[in-house]
Image 1: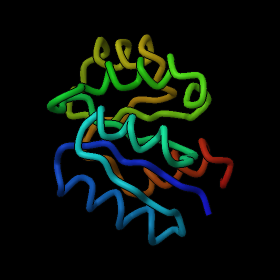
Image 2 (image 1 turned 135 degrees about the vertical axis):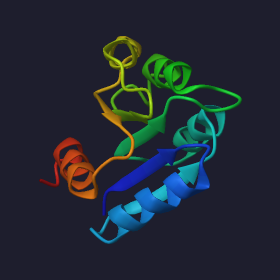
Image 3 (image 1 turned 45 degrees about the vertical axis):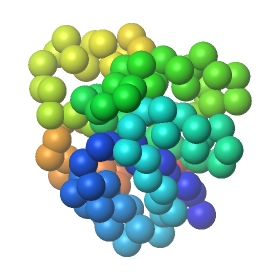
Image 4 (image 1 turned 60 degrees about the horizontal axis):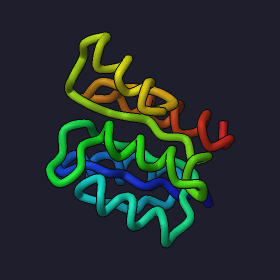
Length: 122
């Protein structure tokens, strides 16, 4: 079973993503900010990270950069998901090391397709 880490400060977003992905057979864990997500990823195996941009403590861009700098985490695919819809926001995410950038609200079918593709389940 592929394991997904959802990093988002909004409980409703985490719940939505959890429901969509668990219905498809994925295991989902959650973190409320980038620092918590980084700590969880250092102590557990994840096949994919879904990360918000705007969060307290550590924002998404910093979180992705830290994942890429950490030898044991650098290989994990990361999709940033945000309400920020400008091209510059996506470019900043890619520059930090994100594999993809999706704009909220994410269609459940698109989310499932993305997760399957990046975890090799598709």
